[in-house]
Amino acid sequence: QVHLVETGGGLVQAGGSHILACAFSGRTFSSYTMGWFRQAPGREREFLASIGRDDEFTAYAASVKGRFTISRDNAKNTVSLQMNSLKPEDTAVYYCAAGRGVFAKSLVREYEYWGQGTQVTVSS
Image 1: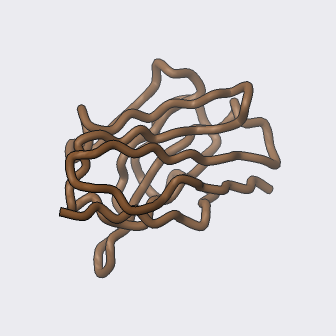
Image 2: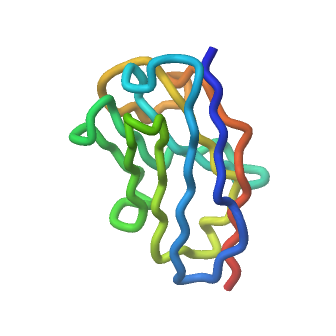
């Protein structure tokens, strides 16, 4: 059973930067594609970024490409999301997810395991 714990949520000013981290445990981290999603009140869960087994396999949603960067540390079993140029519309609960595979994945159904989420609020 995979266990995911997100950390780093909080209140950020618009235009600022913030980083989220996700700790993975329970299985072999390098066998899993990792992803970040978010969900705002009243909206569906939205794909943000994914990283495959290796750093060369990444994918981003158009809404965050160029602003957010996903990275993983296979030695520490962690995945991070660096968020720059934050906007009030980035306010949401951010989720880390894991799905077995090699390549990046962008669909909710492709991920088997989810963290509990962490709130990010961007003030204007």
